[in-house]
Amino acid sequence: MLMFRSFRTLSREILGLNRRNQDLLARYNPRALFQVVDHKLKAKEALTALGLPVAETLGVYRFHRDITRFIAETRNWQEFVIKPAQGAGGEGVVIVTGRQEAAFVTSGGRCLQARDLESHLSDILGGVFSLNHRYDEAFVERHLRAHPALARLSFQGLPDIRVIVFRGVPLMAMLRLATVASKGRANLHVGGIGVGINLTSGMTTYAVAGKRWLTLHPDTEIPLAGLRIPHWEEILAIAARCADAVPLGYLGIDLTLDAASGPCVLELNARPGLSVQLANRRGLRPLIAAIEHCTPQQFSVSERVRLGQEIANAS
Ligand SMILES: Nc1ncnc2c1ncn2[C@@H]1O[C@H](COP(=O)(O)OP(=O)(O)O)[C@@H](O)[C@H]1O
Ligand SMILES: [Mg+2]
Image (cartoon, rainbow, N blue to C red; front, side, top):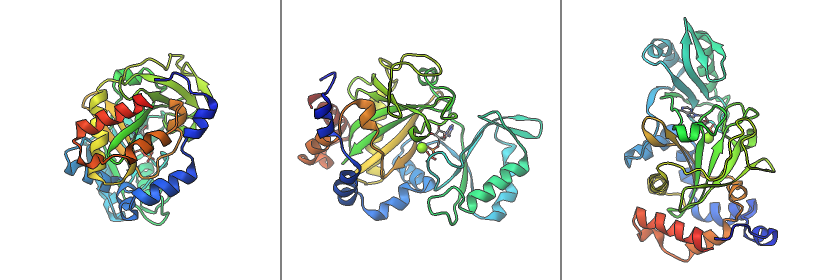
């Protein structure tokens, strides 16, 4: 594999926003399925039906009257995460990591009272954090903890792994890490770091934050390249199977590695961003073109993973 691609080669191979929208989303992603991936509870249901690992849902709140049972239910949970079902970009996600007497301590170190959490749930139901801004559902899920191999790289927060899957074949992947600037979130547009991953070896390659290349994590000063992601083959197989659960041709799968249970799908994305190409210093176009010439739907999961790795190695 080429270590460095020239700038000209790279700019020819990079998939831009227009092409993504016209050539991929319009052709391969049926609109009707967007409402499944854009709703985290529906997406989890589709994934669980195929036996794919997701964070366990502890409670669901659909109507305002449901909020009255929330505080009683929290007695069973030491740590938990509250999410809007149709949220995006980390908005409205509250991570509770412990208790201090009657108060709840969040991952950011804030202390919230029961009535604060109830009014947060009420905001979620009112659609404050949601894509449609009209109404939403809130849910609580198990608090995941990062596998030690990933936890040491991130500044707080739960690192996640984005895998781009085209027609069921994993083609490109990156690790996303939180920074002080991103306030514990791994989302790149709020200041997180993207680190490319070699699809065959599962080793990290190049790192990027915004438009800057990095070799060290700015806060932890740990080198970002050359780390082997544990359970790599399993992660790719799970990502490939997500495209069987929700048959979208072009899909971004976000997974994490939980310290206790291993790989776990966090969410699916029907319009994945394009910065994964920067983190890998290569474009998606030749990889996508290679898949357009075959019929991967006839292949088994492990054949699809092998195919993605071969294409990534060859071009
Ligand atoms: N169950 C969980 N346990 C711990 N942290 C979580 C959990 N779920 C999400 N997070 C953290 O919150 C961030 C946002 O959650 P996510 O489900 O990806 O929603 P969004 O669509 O808003 O990005 C994740 O990137 C991760 O850092
Ligand atoms: Mg996310």
